[in-house]
Image (spheres, rainbow, N blue to C red):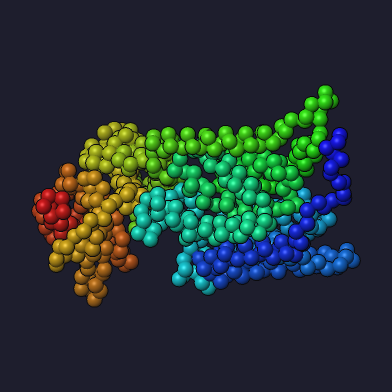
Length: 614
């Protein structure tokens, strides 16, 4: 024991640095400033007001609780930190009472009732967010898209909800962004924060800047966010079977924000160094499991809450080896927790380095998750559209089968699913159709392409069911689904075109399909009205026929284009259509619109000759 005599025994603390609670909390507030600035820039002054309300509520709640308990007022800035963090976790257009309720819950229920700073059982901001998600789930899901110019003075009554990446995949992201298309554009958009989400969690650069400041100031233990992110990356690779999804998942939602500002909370994270690594591993596993298999698309706050509850158990039973500690047999005590923590980190780094490149080579780079599609253009039949996890698109459509002979207008509703490339109908399911036996023959459409369905003429194959008009109406709905997919989901490449004297404003290409955006005017002389028209017309260069028509701008007075007159037509058939013939076939009073559209579509065929064959 001679060597032990060289050491002096003294009471803790053994290391002093001059830090106190207020200085630490001020450092955290400084680190949060970039997130506050970016949240205000992207989501407007109302978003800043929510953060201010939440911060003020937390501070006032703490002081009122102290007064009620006849305790001294506290000015250690910890309540301000809780308020700012919780405020940055709110949707940008939440009602004003949401931060008030959340702030009171965080301070009074989670913090003060358990003894105040350092004695709370879980992170107050994370717990309050989980409470708000459960109590006000619809409000907490009302996100908006970032808009530097348009949202500065927006109020809750102005909310136009927008999807986030976690709910709608890449459909929620702009493409291209700042001139960068595809995967690179998605990453750039998330790094800068120009997307939908909570006020402070979208701009990854602002979060990383705050985290770097806290690490330099030694306010937080860098191991927690680093291992949290590493574990989440490995879990994404395992659960999503996609290397490309790793960065998209890490940069979306509140993962980065939670890793830096909430998981590192002194009071609710483990005391010992290697326990913190195990704690961070648990956070990464739970976050991705909740996202992938849970009912909520975001899992950060719930994962932090669960792991906070396990921290006392970890600190009680996963103890570090004391200096000189030996087993009952007199051997040095093995560093089991240390070896386990370091071994897990090493194994995850190795797995990520080996597996990610292999998966990246073989994966399908669609970058799409399940979620709603915000349709652009005008569609008479489509009620809503969704992108499934396998990339296929599901449309909910409605229409009417005109059973004139029975004096019956039959309402129809179906779900129509197109494959991931929008080439075939994979499934048609009835939601509402006739209760009188006039049901559509779904086998006529399932497994068929646009061209095959457009060319169907024998729609009354089973006359006994009298379902001819039902099948005809369903065919119209399905063709509109193809047009909606073509205009909203399919990826086109923009082509240059210098044709003079025509109405074409844009030309795009996808394989043999060429899409023309064409503008014109329908001269409604009898109403002294020049009706502006704009259509997206897709031509199939292989067959020389009109593949799809999407209305971008058209009359609000009921003079709408009869698309079925033109779908599937060739340039020759279009030229053979006379004004009298169009008028004879129309019962909607849209003669002038159809005649004007025929001229616009003819220009598209002329341009097709130049760009595809010239």
